[in-house]
Image 1: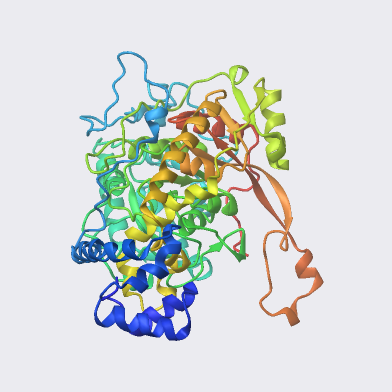
Image 2: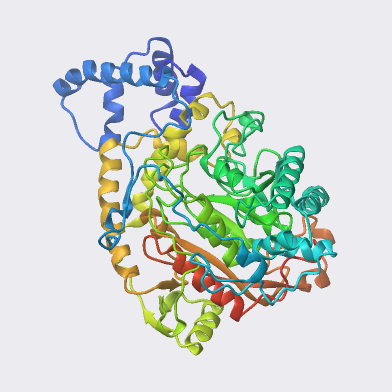
Length: 601
């Protein structure tokens, strides 16, 4: 670290940390940059990091081992480690999940066959039940589709499109062209596209049409257009991570999730925007907008995925979450977003933010669509050591009369209460849930700080300005001073958080509402954003601001828009099917009035 920094850079960082006087900073920066030597004075000034006091003899004794430590640190920094290589330690929070019944297999080695449901396409044509879809109720009666109306087609979901493709009502090529046209038309407003893969999409659509005509059916995603969050590597296209230094970089290895969607016959429309290094909705080229209210950002970091799905620019998309990056934009853009259990889906080939927190999941307009996509992308691949094969029975048959819905009374919103009233009227049992609060969750965020700083250390050290790192620069900088002991102790405390969270969630089938975003991302439990019904919001409430205050008028402030409501569901480890099943009940019982914004405002 010392020799790689210029004298000026050292002064800037020492000044930002408030270490020493200007004269001291100047002298220390000079010594560090020129000689790379560690001095007794440096040790003296670094005691605050360790919160210990050393004698003069102890400081002298530390010189040699610290010089050796610095030497080793530099040798590791010079070692070229590909971004797809994670640490030797694999984080396995699902160790504390309920054990599988006797005879059920659980592995963390590649499956011989996909662990998701193998779907007989006959149900798409005749609505026939089978082992994977025992009680189909398709298509959603709330939105009968006129297949000659491009807007109605764009608003439809996977199930409706799959049935129509096999019934000859539409081709994958026409479906793909509808979405490509909409992407070109609305991206100048929404700024959700990083790379449009038009030629590939048309080739894949033509292949899907040919295969379906020949009777080769790859399942419910065959011929369905989708979008990839731009942390997902799909060569030969750039994978930018939303960061300016990487805007032309092509990652060499195809991400597992993209490969599985290719095998399922899905059609890739493009790479969708991600906030720089997976934070927020501001990326290297623009800010992605919420299509229900384009004066408002779409939230992030799955910014483009949520915006594009909400606007009817693709049938579904993949997003990722470390600390809210599916849940937050799904809420903002009023779509369905499923953050799976940690260990359910491989992250191989996707940008790492934190090895112990990252999850990949689907974003769609219908709950059942999220279940279909998760069934395709989940399961081990032999490349991500944290992934385990667990059964994913979908759709999940259950009786609302036997459903146990948990809630935290003090955290219920108006939308939460509406859903509680509906489920209670349908026979579900409502149970209060309490999470212990003895563990300081914010203190455990050191794991995210350190892991993200380690992952992006080379960018941190080579960046010419903080803007190249988006909003991460302060965290990357402070993480250089975190003690190893602190990180390990935080991970031990995290074990306690995982155990107590799993115990609480086992008392119910789903938890509705609750401000548990930090807790459940630290623990790895699954959550799902569910959209339903509608509500009226003023543009002020929705976040509209006029950049020219002098032209702001009262009528503009009072303009009202109608948008879907959302609630969040959470479940125990590998309770993903419960989330989708309950979300499907809510969606059908309290359908949204408008599938997509009919006019991009």
